[in-house]
Length: 161
Image 1: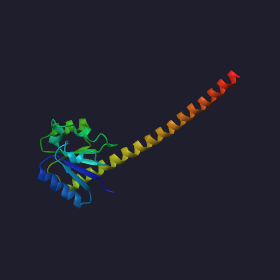
Image 2 (image 1 turned 45 degrees about the vertical axis):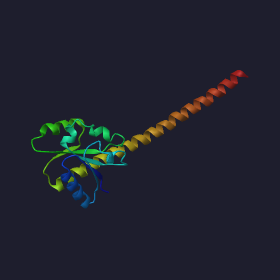
Image 3 (image 1 turned 90 degrees about the horizontal axis):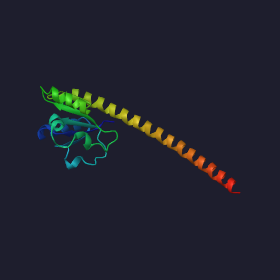
Image 4 (image 1 turned 120 degrees about the vertical axis):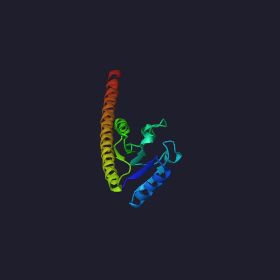
């Protein structure tokens, strides 16, 4: 199974060309100009967001908050231009999974996509385990309270007789 990808920001021609190349390689790909693009709101699932550095550093809506409803949130790969080490550092501090310098080889991008997708799958499995663990704990707590309530009710009946 290949990940679903959102390519965001950058020049429209570059964005569309990259999306076309990735689609030919079997990925499900969407494109958006900005985090406020209406086409990306309430998407069912996006595994990877490939985003240009100007989206990360712009004053527009925070890229990380856009996908906060997805659990786990998608991994972000930041496309950088040469000489943008500061943007790379800022991205890593904000939680970017990886970065890639433009121009790049598609094989290099695919390697980063694969690693990011594996990381997201790992997060999903961990969340699922935690969710199952929480459900089991909830059942035990509920049964404990239920037992305590029954005993409390039986205890009250004995005192009133």
